[in-house]
Image (cartoon, rainbow, N blue to C red; front, side, top):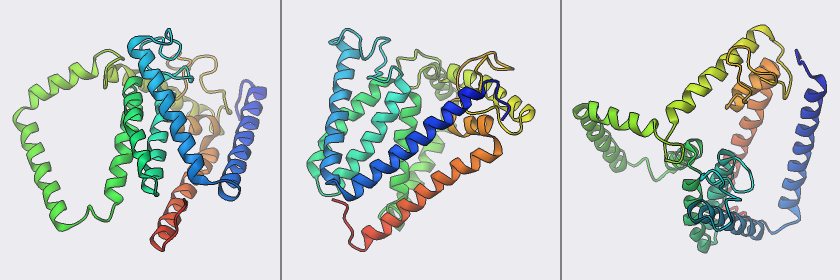
Length: 276
């Protein structure tokens, strides 16, 4: 690595290994020593309680701003985007738990949606919509001739609306994306501009440090182009900058293995397997 701080890089790698071992151990105990359904219900209950408490703090200040000091729900993460990721994960865990034979758990979806809204995180909202979209696209019942026909009709109507009111819709979008960070979709343009500047730092590091700047060393002293100290705002670009073309395929391999595992689990469910 071209790390300015090798000790920091070594520490980050050590933390990565620790978290990996922790995850494998947790997965082992969940699979062999626990009642997974009960664990999932407890996880959902905790997530819902935190979501409701944080929403109430952001709206009415019942905890004195401890969970939402900047009027964006952050929970115990001190970062609304990370808290949003946690709640989105909890949303799909809740959905899976309910669909797996505990329908009462569907009640947890509403407080989690409220919590996600309170974060005002555009990334969390996109993750939620993307996950629901992937589920809908992968569900075998969606691709019937009748439903595909309905989707095509809706798409045609949408194109007609955009074509007829293009200028008005563009103005509305610009106003929304230029709004406050406390609004859904707000500050999207500002956020995009910030990310583009940081991504120029990624491009600089890839060219000048082909073997990577080292884990935890990206923009440590301010970006070479932007002067910004923020992370890459992208796991993939961050991996590329810090761990080069050697580390990025490894990260993609982990994701591919998870996708393959989900595929095998889906096949097992179709043959009668039930996790709960």
